[in-house]
Amino acid sequence: MNTNSKKNRIRILREGIDRIDRGFVGLLEKRLRLAARIGALKNRSGAEVHAPDREQQIYSQLAKYRSKLLMPEDLKNVFREIIHLCRSTQKKFSVAYLGPEATFTHQVAARSFGPAANYTPCRTIADVFKAVEKDTADYGVAPLENSLEGVVHETVDTFTLSEAQIVAEHIQEISHHLLSTSGDLKKIQAVYSHPQALAQCRRWLEKNLPGVPTYPSASTADAAVQAAVDAKAAAIASLFAKELYHLEVAASRIEDFSKNLTRFVVLGKKAPPKTRADKTSLLFIIKDRPGALYDVLEGFKQNNINLTKIESRPSKTKPWEYIFFMEFLGHVTDAPIKRAIARLTQMCTHIKILGSYPKA
Image 1: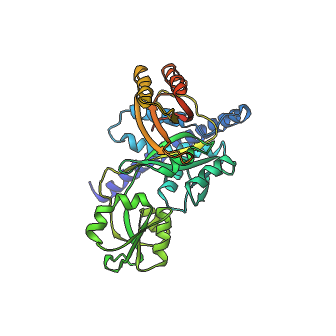
Image 2 (image 1 turned 180 degrees about the vertical axis):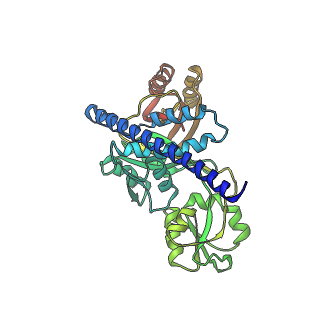
Image 3 (image 1 turned 90 degrees about the horizontal axis):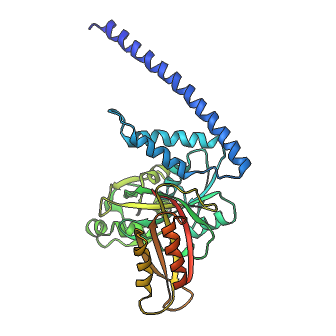
C-alpha cells in the first residue's frame, strides 16, 4: 500500500470515528435531558439527587456487558464522568472533606461527586461532620477504615456525638510516596504525615531513613505543605499532592504492604433507598453482665446475618465502659436484621444505627 493509499484509508477510518462521535454527542444530550427531567421530579417530591443506589445499579449492569476491547473498570471510569455530568444538571452539590487539598479524602470526594461540585476542605474529621449537621455542606467524606491499620478512631468516635449518617461508601487503593522539595533522600532530616500513613510505611522508614524523626500531621496534604516550606523535611503523601504543592518524588510506593486499601464513607442526613447489596453500621453499649457480648452475637447468628466487623472503643463518658462498632451485610429494614436489632436493644443501654447504604 503506497503512501497516498494509507492516507486515504486513515482518512476514511477517521471519518467513521467522527460519525460515531456525532452520534455519541446526540445520545449524551438525550441522556442529559432525561436526567434534568428526573431532577425536576426529585425536586418536587423532595427526593435526594445523590443516589448511590442508582449508581451501583448502573455499574452492576455495565459489569454484565461482554466486550473484547473494554474492561469493566474502563466502562465504569467512562460512565462515572457521564453520571457526574448528568447529576450536575439536577443540582450542584457542596461537599466537605478532610483537607487541605490533595488528601486521599479529597480524591475520593472528587471521584464521588465530580468536578462540578463545590468542595470545602476541613481541618479535622469532626469538622466534616459539623459541616453536614449545620447544612453548610450537602455531604461530607471521611476515612473510616484502612485494610492494614484498622478503623480510623476519630471517625468512629465522632459518630457517637453526631447526627450525620452514612449514605455511601467508597474503597480507594492507597499508594504512598515520599515527597520533598529536592527529591534527594540524603537531604531529608524529618518526615511528616498522617499517623495512619506513618504506620503504613513504618518498615520502609526504619530501613531507608534510620534515625530520621517522624512527626504526625492532621493529613497527608498538611504534611506536603510542611515539606513545601522546609527543604529539610519530607512528606508521605500522594502524587496528587506532589503536583499541587510542587514537590519532587524522593521514593515511590513506600507502603510496607501493596494491598493497602482505605474505606471512605459519605455522610449525609437522609437515608438512601434499599438496594440488593447493602451494609449496615451501628454503635451499641451492652449492659455489664457475664456473657452479654456472647448473647448479642448469638442473636445475629440465629438470624443468619453476616457480621463483617466488630470493634470496641472506650465510651469516654464512663471509666471502663466500651462502645462497640459493628457492621453487617443487609439493610435495617430486612426482617432478620429487624429481629436481631430488637434483641440487641433489649441487651443494650445505648444503640445507634449509623446507616444502611449500598456496599462498595
